Length: 163
Image 1 (cartoon, rainbow, N blue to C red):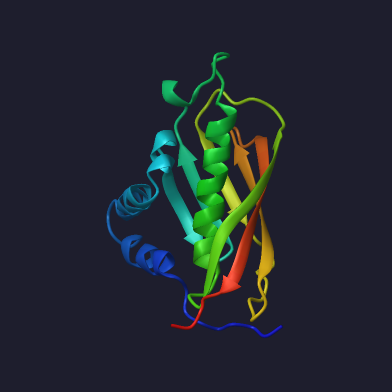
Image 2 (cartoon, rainbow, N blue to C red; image 1 turned 180 degrees about the vertical axis):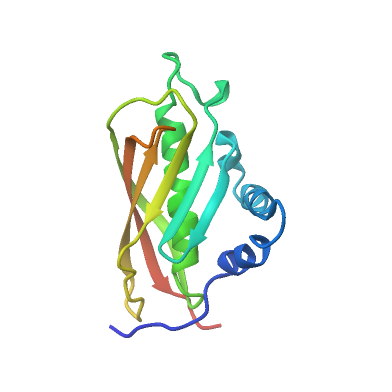
């Protein structure tokens, strides 16, 4: 497999520009939510983004609580998908494309606070000519830093077709 040294994707390039500005991460998050409207449902804020890493926070508000008053399972899935997808886009070179192919989740506890999702790849794999399944681990933590939800999102990564 050959290592692809192409430039990062558009999303990461935009992040690098906006993160330097006051409220840049807020503006960046709004743009992401405009492109993927469902993400808005958890009121995310992308706090950190780099190849192999994305950290996203969200408040615990009425719209994401279940009937028990805890952070809803599907809202947790949404938080995992935001962090996993944005991190994947920042990691995969611009010569490649990706799409979520599946997600396995584990509910470890419950959360009654705001949450933070962290997607991390270490080490970052090589992206070559052959398509691959990239498994992205994501943890969702409560305000005390306890992991209450974990996901493994399988991203199908392939080289973009020549135009």
